[in-house]
Image (cartoon, rainbow, N blue to C red):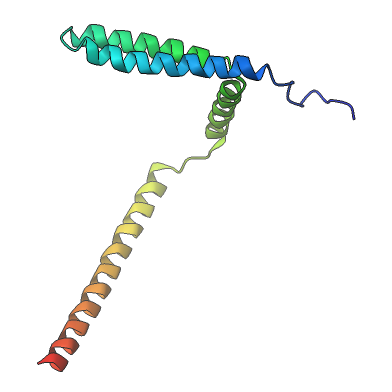
Length: 126
């Protein structure tokens, strides 16, 4: 069976993949521990360090097969969001008002039902 252009490329070395994910885990854990260990330092410096380490961890994660698949999924989701036809302001306002009116109507129905059942139970109990 011939491979088509849309077929996924062969997976890379699984040991290399696990090594990359291990590096990501080490980076995340080191950011957490470093943030805790240097808690007496300025919050700005710690935040910048955590963001820098997180950026490196994301970069390493995107070098894996799953990371590349995730990046492709994000690109496709962004394209899909651009295709969505969003409702106009008038349509949104009308829909919101309909929902609010229905909530009020059903609230009154449930309140009436609750009051009636409470009256029946008090009549039976005494």
